[in-house]
Image (tube, each protein chain N blue to C red):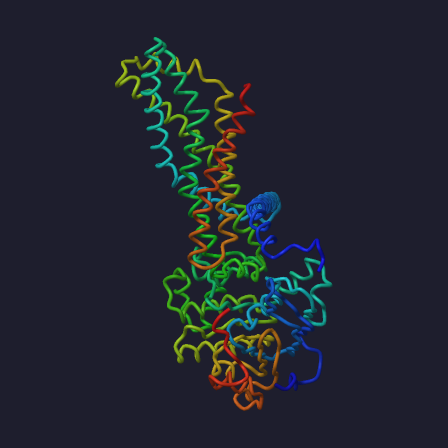
Length: 274
Length: 265
């Protein structure tokens, strides 16, 4: 018998020691594969946005779903966020006698941060989930295959209009949320904290810079793309009936939420010096 | 089991499949399929669940990429054509899906006219009028066109799906389990509509089914698929007395015979 031969027990032991490494390797490969698949899916979707034919009717439907039907929930979120920021910043700033900075804090917090992030998260839960469920159901009931048999590219018909709607509609929503968030802060400052209405608004307008609005809208466009991309990607690749559609919906919301927060940091870093 | 029994008409087939193979992981689903379907005839493919029938249709449609083998339509190998050529050939195929696969978000008339608008760039008003006429051909009133697919019964949904499949006058028609989930009378009605449509359009058809009555009504010829191979081909009228033990067991529903159901994977 060969001396260098490994006994079955030793081999099993070495395999069990390596199993965490193997599991880590599998997880890394799976993650890289998923990132690659999402990137290819996104590039395909973008390429179909810029090549005819365009499905304007579907784009408008997705746009209305994104912008119009999400408006109430985004508006409420923005108003309450502005109100909370005004209250919390007053509590902290009163200790240093710096309450005059509240208008500025509310403005920067809402416009640069809270409005785009919270609107993105709200839309991810509302529209991203609905997109994943709709496309997932279409996948498991052969409707996506049916599109192909009817000479229609599903990426162009289903994905491209939704991606475009996401990019264009969320900045509009966030612009409204910016105004309402600041209005929420103004409401609390004037009704509860004793600020004069004119003074608060003058302070707000004095502090407002074009860059704040640009950051807000750029973030909104990126988050809109992320919500639509995750909804479409997970729905389009859905498998296995109702359970698969449910998983796709959950994955769409969770992945969009995480990516929104991650890209929020990246974009904030990019715009940090401005 | 004897080898593959083949008997059929001479001449160039409309659809010619040779050596078609497709595996999903370790599971070989199509294991060297050879099949000819002549112009203007209907071929019925029978076989148990998981025998590869739907995969066969999806390979011809290009919805699934085959691992090897050739698929020719009108003598042209689809794999040798460029993307546009393949899409043009496949645009000649109308497909009736097993569950109808109607688009939930569109009205019935929009479903029926979808191919007309997408393939032939027909204006919506004209497409709507045409959809009404096609709905009439499958026994539905034009007023049904304004309903959503979810408002229709199973039989009506199958009729609408058939109307959508034939709307663009395809040269080739595929039917995936056209009578599944329907009562016997509605099944016979759908079969009658299918044979009428195929004859009127002069189309070449492939239907896959478990329903023996449906197979004999729809098919001119029949083939049996088992474990990814065609184990018998012949005239559809001989399905019940084919002389092939597998076909005999399948068509009569015998529990014992050469086909063993895999109860555990």
